[in-house]
Amino acid sequence: MKYGLFLGCNMPAIRPDVERAMRLAFPALGVEVVDLEGAACCPAFGTFPSADENASLAVSAWNFSIAEEKGVDFIVECGSCYSSLRLAKDKLEKDHERKEKVNEMLEGAGKRFEGTSVPRHVIDFLYHEVGLEKIREAIKKPLKDIRAVVQYPCHTRYPSEVLGFDDPGRPRVLQELVEALGAEVENYSRELQCCGGAGGFARLAYLDALQFAKKKFDAIKKETHADLIVVACITCLMHMEKVQKDLSKGNGDLFDIPVFDYAQVLALAMGFDPKEVASISIIPREKVIQKMTA
Image 1 (cartoon, rainbow, N blue to C red):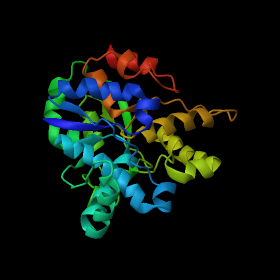
Image 2: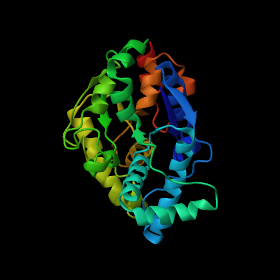
Image 3: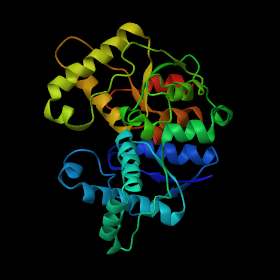
C-alpha cells in the first residue's frame, strides 16, 4: 500500500515530532510513504483565495500534479490542508473552464492537474484503509487505564458531501481509532465545538477566541477525567496547547491537559521512543507519557 504524505507548513516547521510519528508508524502498518518533493502550501483559506482564487487553485493543483506524477493518492494530517485541497479538487473537476485556466498557469512550470490523485485525511485513511484490526495487532503497549477525549477537525466535517468520511453530526472515527489503542474515550457536551484556532478568529479577536476555548476546556474538566486530549489536526494541536497556557495566566485556574496528535499516541502504543515521536509540547506531558509507556 503506497501513499504520498502531504506535510503542509506547520508540521515540519513547528511540530516535526508529529511527522516523525507518522514516518515510523505507517511503514510498521504496511504503508509505503512517498515523499511529495516540491509540494507547496495547500494553500490555506483566507487572504490568498479571497484575493486571487485562480492563483490559489493553481497552487493546490501544483500539489496534486506532484502526487499524480508519482501515481499516488496522498495522506493529509492538517484539517485545513485537507479541506483546502479537497475543495480545490472538487471545484476544478466541476468547472472545466477554470481547470484549463489553472493548467495554463502551471504550463510554464511543466505541471498539469488531471484530478487523478485523491487527498485522504489521516484518520480516514487509518480507519478505512489500514483498519482497526491491523492497528490493534500492531500495538505493543496498550493504553490501558488511559482516559482520553478527542477533538475532531472541523474542516473534515463540512461540507460533508465533499469532505465527509464520517457522520458529520455524530462522528466516531477518531474515537474508535483511540479506543483501538486500548484507551477509554470519554464524551462531553462540547466535544464538537471548534478549538477556535483556525482562520481570522484567533488572529483578529484572540481574547474572544480564548473565552470561546475556555468553555470547551471547562466542560472537559467538569465532565471528564481526561488524562489527555487526542487531536487529528496540527492547528488544533498547537492552539489547544497555547490557549491552555494563556488561560492559566493570573486567574487562578489551571488548564494543563496534555494534547497529542493521533499519530503520536499511535506511535507510542506501537512502542516507538517518546523522544522521537512526542518530544515537543507547551503543556507538560512527561507524566502521562510515562503512564502510557510503562
